[in-house]
Length: 281
Image (cartoon, rainbow, N blue to C red):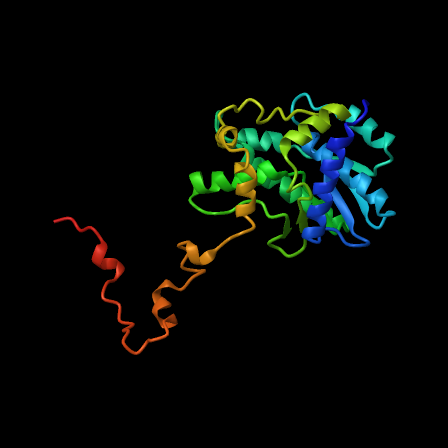
């Protein structure tokens, strides 16, 4: 392992610690299960939390959980050695989700959605069965802003990845401590640390994924204005419902009731949706 550039490590620890504090992600006594996929992001997250745990005088626990999805070429021997050298508790659980995804998704289509659902179900079940209070994921700032832009452009709604999430079944808290961290810093850090990366052979060949296209678009815009990525992230923290069009958040039909002089205003609706339907002759 080579020496880590102190400026990069300090920056990563600063932004990770800030996110944990801003969103109250980890409390005293928490048992944090870090999802270690074998990629640069999850290795970085685990390393940072391992350092922050020591700095806190072990006020919380960390545990590394790796899911072996039975992908061809999977080899976790170096990963095991890396964890054992650092005395990090871990488990590598084998579940053949690879075959399920390959069977259900046609060749050339995006595997990520089904793969993520299967993986999430296994992670949640394991955390519940073993009493882990928090599930930590390695998503970073660029993941959050790309997801937002993908949602707008391809799904027609405004959503991203929250830094802290209560699961639908109310049994899990999911945290993303690196939500402020830039991917470029993670890349620099991972190279310096020489993490034993395990590549994802399932989706690595799908070069035309929408996420990659959106990432390139943001990168191109950032060449003209370097503040654009951070501005997108800030937009996720500065929602102004009254400036949008969501009728569940703002009662446009009764907006007139907010006027100071309501005596002269009628609440009668003179148009309905049916008035604007196109009818064939």
